[in-house]
Length: 158
View 1 (cartoon, helix red, strand yellow):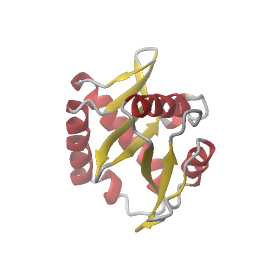
View 2 (cartoon, helix red, strand yellow; view 1 turned 45 degrees about the horizontal axis):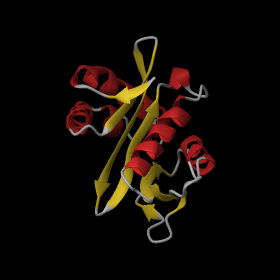
View 3 (tube, one colour; view 1 turned 90 degrees about the vertical axis):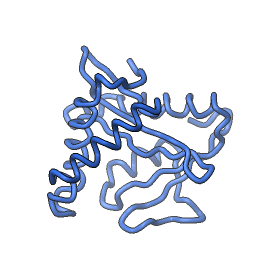
């Protein structure tokens, strides 16, 4: 089931975010950059705000939050700011369901283009996004150590 996150989900969302990020940042960035107390607190505050804005979707299985996606408009363009699945649940279609729910939400709101940034060492995520129609942003292909991808939403595009 995919649903909007509520304030009651904040602990699960923040923990999932921290665990998922550790899988792709570990070995590439100092642990403090993604596991340090200041970073964990900053991320939790960001998730709380996104949940309050109604911008977070949760994938729930057997009562457990197993995937999360956050999105919002910035500079007149929709951004997929986060999409994480518990590593123990990878390859079960949860990310694809969350992605489809985001696309459906965007289409309903009249969005025709979305953007995201993906860590340049996270090849698994890059392959996921490519399989779902994301391509390098022709205007800004990189932002530091992240690749910038763009999705054009046509009537048949997911």
